Length: 233
Image (cartoon, rainbow, N blue to C red; front, top):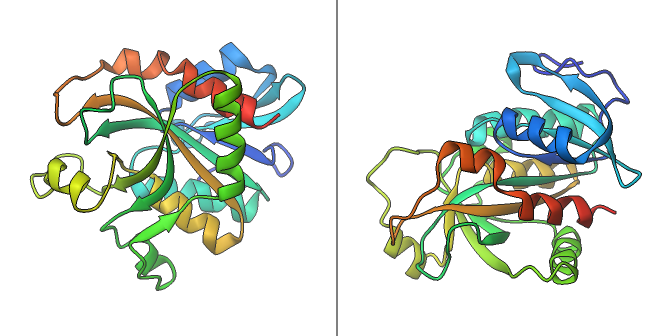
């Protein structure tokens, strides 16, 4: 156990899928997993371990932002011997070419966050996800005949802010979309020598102003969820 998790050693699978929302973790566990066991409920950050088509997997929420993702992903990698984490979350698109519910695989993450700097002195502002894990996910999407966008994203520390121009972020920094957790996840994977990937569903578009509801974000991301689940088989 850790200060933030009450799962016992051995109750967490080697592969973890991490939505941000605890309710989405519960939704995935109840809908897709068999032999499900609740393994963590500290601070309401629900984690479930079960099997998907015979493969053991844990689905656990990360919470919002790099600090929260930083805590849980580090503890999973370092204390629970997890080998790989696939973030499955939502994002806001920076281009009209991405539509609501499109699925995006983040091959690289750009951020102004100081998470890496204060974690271990790392000053990199761009971090890559794990190529081998990305390849598995990409192949799985092709088998499922699901169009998969791939590219760079922006990981922000601020949800309500006015210092980022979506058009500039897209054209100058080549970021397709924005979210808030992948930078800490990719950094922790690098620090611990583990694997990390980030699958995102477009929940809103900063250019067209389209958006989904909180209920839709909780329960309507099944295409992304199935890509992640099938990629671990």
